[in-house]
Each structure stands twice: as C-alpha cells, then as structure tokens.
Amino acid sequence: MFISDSAKVAASWKWMAGDETCGICRMPFEACCIECKTPGDECPLALGECKHAFHMHCIVKWTETQNAARPQCPLCRQEWKYAPG
Image (cartoon, rainbow, N blue to C red; front, side, top):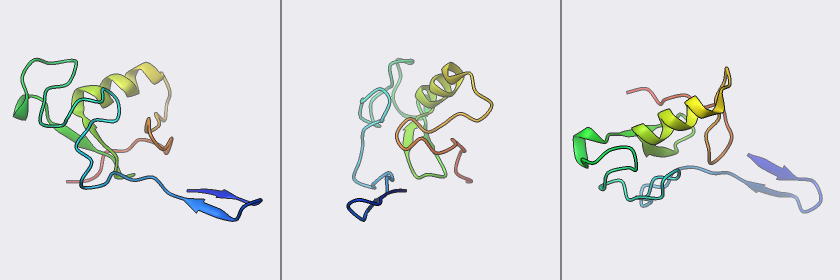
C-alpha cells in the first residue's frame, strides 16, 4: 500500500478477477507465454500472496533474473511468495 502525506491518498494493487493478461509478458492467460508453445495445462498460472497472477514460466524467469534472496512481485514490489493452494 502506498500512502501520500501531501494528498492523503491511499492506493493498493491487486490482481482483479477480470484481468486476463499476464503482467510480465502481456499475453492473455488462455494463450501460451513467451517461454512455451502450448497453451493450457502446459502453461499454468501462478498466483502470489499479493494476488497478482502470471504465467508460471514468466514469474519463474522474473524471480531468477532478480538474483535476490527475496524476489519481488513485478507489479507491486512486495516480496514474491506463491499463494497457498
């Protein structure tokens, strides 16, 4: 959450159920990501505790390229943790 003292505004980012596009590759979830050629079960979705969703291949590549002990969500910069379940 971001809070501005000057304007007293609060904002929060989360994945919305109607958002059907990967925030990393910008491809629709029903399509395959840029890492694979087969949509569907071969290209599963990953949901973070922050409620942002990505193609599994996209978020794995993102976290590996960050080279950090605690990778961050590419959209909200919270520590990236997979949502349970």
